[in-house]
Image (cartoon, rainbow, N blue to C red; front, top):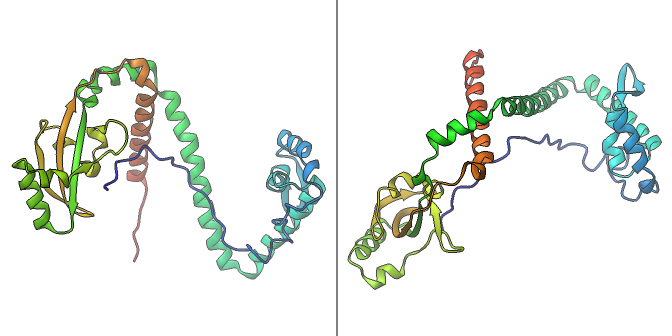
Length: 275
């Protein structure tokens, strides 16, 4: 089976901290499912969200804001215990900075890049989205959305690590041999098996659009081996109304503009590659 292309993926990344998993469990409140205060923390969460920037403690000059209590409150601790755990966390952080300065510096830089990149992506994407107008969407629809983009293809395939076997199947299908045809299977397994050119695996949609029903694509090398594609049927579909695709068009415009913005910023950045 060969994969079909997926939908757009989200841009956000997670920050994963792989230390303190076992040794710090009880001390930092990670093992809190047994907390007797689990049912009492709900009101605390609401109060903290309303005053997220209020300082609740200072440890050796490092301030702890109420917002930093949310992970503990969400896990079931009451506010007093959450403050205590947050203090422990800052004590440990300050100790790391003193005892393991270089390791801490590297970890902070990595975390900084992750956090700030996420902030930029979130904020800039929203700004770009807000800049897309109804006129932009209509212009895209009129100039770039074509009826043939919605033509669908019913495709079968055969793939083999043996190039000769693939060629034999290709030739046999061309002659209409039942044995060769029986080796083909649907690219899309579900429903009526139709897919658009954009969904054809390995970017072969452009080549498939040049074929007619009953024709096959010349064998092509892919990750799994040598691939044979056969067009079983083609269905012409009307261009959808603007209202039905304006959301997708807006997403595409946002992606295009964001990528162009990033290209310009990268071009302006001073980048030094070091081995």
